[in-house]
Length: 170
Image (cartoon, rainbow, N blue to C red; front, side, top):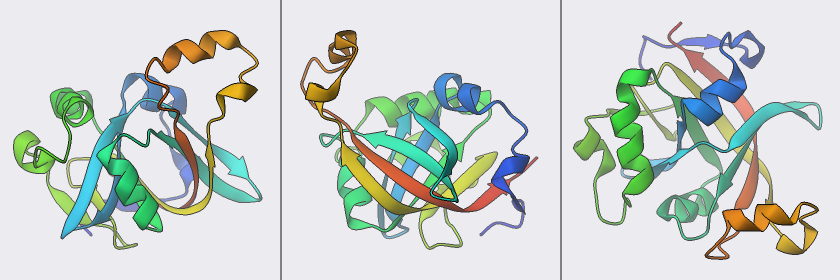
């Protein structure tokens, strides 16, 4: 792990979490340096559940990252400054089945303290251990307008990850 990151408590994250997730986007990464995939996300949340600090991520089964998230116990969430917006756009629109996303974007994959992958250019990294998952069930939508988010009927799997470490460059 790079010495440029400092371990902090997730409660010390100074930026607005909703802005980090929704507007700035982030990368969900699972696997190891030999074989991993990453994808851009703008849906998720962080908080407290079962007396643990947690992050919720949402991954469609059609995404290549889904396979890696299923096979691995850990995943990382990497947040970036705005100058990496093009890299995040690429990682969200191109499949790791077809492209080496790190090579194409210039992002530098590094190993986290949990043995998963994050990126040297990130300003904030959450290392998480999967502790729960649940598949979105459209029969339980109370607001029927939500169904419009799923024209392909490819409902997300929700993963709850316990935040085991939080790394910051701030």
